[in-house]
Length: 165
Image 1 (tube, rainbow, N blue to C red):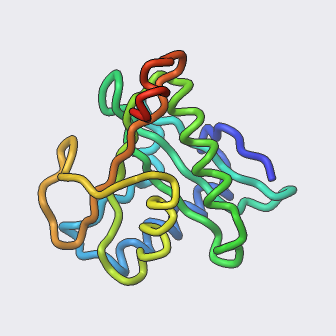
Image 2 (cartoon, rainbow, N blue to C red; image 1 turned 90 degrees about the vertical axis):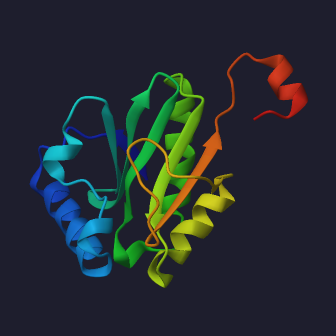
């Protein structure tokens, strides 16, 4: 599989993201929908990656810069036929590495509370995310779970020794 920054100009990724937004709209009440559409993902401060297996698009994910040290995970999606095949874990490892390389010290996310989102919440927990209070412009919402994790400080030997990452 290959993970690459995507400029969101191709029809395949446009269709893939449209399916994602439609699925989120069918599950989540409108006031609790936070999935970004194609135009929103093209805005400055967002880095978007696609995952391909050969020529087949199998996943995507993005980070949105909130401030100099804090980014938000957005638009994580695995193709339905590839769920539980390692695509999401591979992408999470990549995004965490890239967010750290970009200098972020914290990565946060919002996901749903419905049963549908349980595999996603388990994935995030597996990668060290823990529940937190709403961040950025989010408000408390019974349909939202907020999670965050510290990113490893590059070159911070004291942090590593203290287990602060």
